[in-house]
Image 1 (cartoon, rainbow, N blue to C red):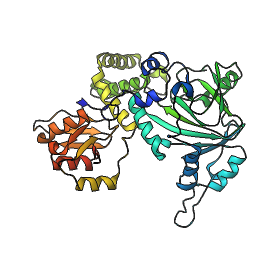
Image 2 (spheres, rainbow, N blue to C red):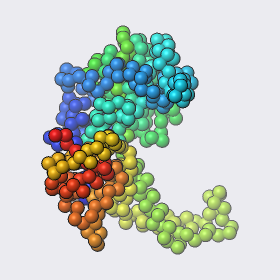
Image 3 (cartoon, rainbow, N blue to C red):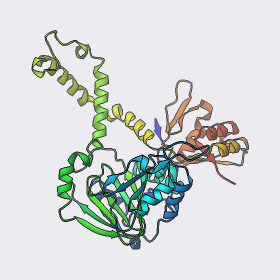
Length: 416
């Protein structure tokens, strides 16, 4: 297979979205901070604001005019998450679904000191859809985006840790953050802070490792596991949290085990029944010879495994964890029907495209976040050019292939 996952969206800067969040180089961040230490980048150091990505007006629009439903919003107060029924209601004639956000209820709750948490903004707010897509490509790890709007002098959530890394972008107002050392370093997604409430509560009383008041334009990076709590100061405070669900060595472990189990299913000695006297519910009744036989075979399979045996499954998981850049169904059909030889196609960003090896007939497939796209032998050169370079002229690809690429969600038409 030929991997074109990084094509489309990084030209001119290898990691443009990540670079925007850092006052240091992306290489220095990768070497010194990624997954291991907090890093604050101030607005003065960054030299740019983030109001193009989100704002209080954007939050109001989403809650009052977009018909959002749960779970696109959570509401919390004094460390407690409110039930959905406390802030949702039917939307009236033609929109009677009961779990829609109620702007009236949210107004009362927010005025009373509740924090509003807009979730999944990488799916609902255009600028953050684009930014999150690019950041996921820059990092090679899936990302999600939430926003937290906190009334003055309120704390939405008590000290806790996340099981994913985060970038916190202060959008409006000020918020005081207290950061403390992990009680569990690099926790997995199956190890949330609720499993360690007592340890987290005790550690929350210790002197902070870092205490900082964030103002609009400041960005804080926190690796998973670091305890944190944030309190709004003298006015409404809004921040965006970009969660990074990092791929870990534990994911490789899971792929290795899955591979080994599949391989050992072909071994008749592993398929052999345990003796009648065995009782798998009691360890002392399972013959040691059976246990040892399986263990030896498992060790042998794992010792012989290569990255090529397990990484294709990792590639599938990576592809499924993020979306390609949005594509406009109606406009794409119109553009495909109006294609001419002077038009230019550009590869859809963040597609994570892989071109399979040609079969005996010379045909292949593009496997991507848009699904599978068949490529005939005569089309292979044009598709390779698009995937490698990011663009192709219709006169080079041919009208028929160009239309298929647009309708297949692989390419878009550059506006003339």
